[in-house]
Image (cartoon, rainbow, N blue to C red; front, top):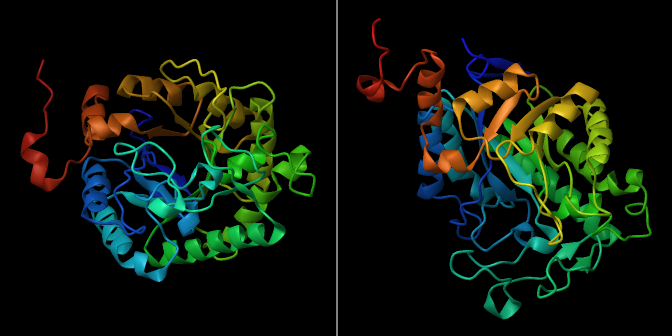
Length: 359
């Protein structure tokens, strides 16, 4: 049996393999409500054999949405359809997770394929917030620097979103602190220019993330896994660094975080990313080996043998796959065949399962 198809236990959850459907925005919700698109999108990946399926960045408040098409979990009415989705995922042998997020200054956008620009209030947009009053793009609206009261609201929003996620049946939560969204905006000195207890030093810049984690943990079952996604580096001079990510991850381990989902970038237009297959794996490896926390590798991982090599080399514990799952919802089933593993196919699809030729 390959490592890719070896089960792993994380707290009270057993993942049947090491393949995770990475959160991918679909921009297909209305007022935050999931619908049949999300049921089919997420459900088909469960049928396709992924062990853990994480719903896209789901806003903890209306103003936390990246776009008007983002999923939300800021009110109880959102729960019902999410529960239908999680029930389907679990009935098909996978585990349902959700990524809780707040976009901060990168919020208030239109549907990207219709109009890739921020919306003003007259066209359905809203005021954005951030660590400091610095826009992501010079043409964007200037965000409002969060007051202490505003920060308290963010923490409260994450807490109540967690309570709804429990009712919706999710078994894993991932806190989104990457890709230039609100929590990352506090982490990076390129955006965080505050002079209060949330700005300046490393300890101050990570404060909001740690407080959000505490708020989530007040209501999240201790036996359920809690992940954090980070951008390991801003890929820009003067920004958040890989060394800071190692320091942060060591602290996250002491705070009860189970896994660091290790991505990168998204904070600044000045980023210079050397794209290549597995270009972020080294960050996951460094964090894993230097802190002992579980890590997830993500970023241009598209082949079964590539994923297996990452695990065999001890560079990560889980493989998070995004775009390849958009191309092929059944990636795990085909990967198992390629690696010589015999995994169970859905009964409805069993007659199409490829069989090894007899020698």
